[in-house]
Image 1 (tube, rainbow, N blue to C red):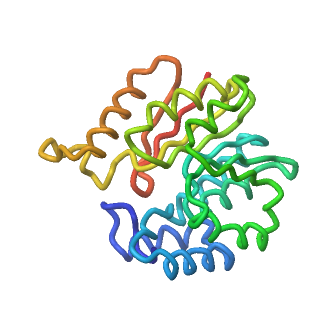
Image 2: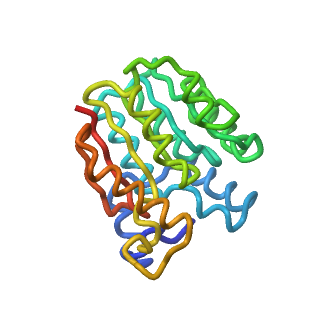
Length: 220
């Protein structure tokens, strides 16, 4: 995780970019190091530091108090979102892995945000569908099983308040979404999701070339 996740950024430019935003503090760096040590190559699933800084800032900008995350991995993104919430805010995290999420828990405690994070272990769609269909969430982040993106999106969309924001990760998929010769299942799933959002007149959206591609969706 020391290098860029952005396929179009070299090492030097990525380092410059991170250094000229809000860089990861000691706790985030320790969590990154622990993730690498515990899960090895799978650590590529952790969001990039510049994306984490963006998500913290965005949560603050929209005054988020209630947030939901689909796909927590080892807890870096959850920590970043929780830090951006109001002091009495709450982040519901949906994940299926007790093993991976347990890596992040000590760092949530260390950062003083554990009381803002409600981790729910189980299939994310079941967790989402168990929530009241009320437009009460300010912010959502989707970063989980790619073929399930449309279902996650629909369940989250009906629960986001007007003016709220949904963030969706990996929408450029290493650039493969624009490579017609790549017909891998996950690539096609992300293409289909991107097409769905692009033609969805219920929302306003922009695809950002941040990390591996991040779509920002505003609910009018």
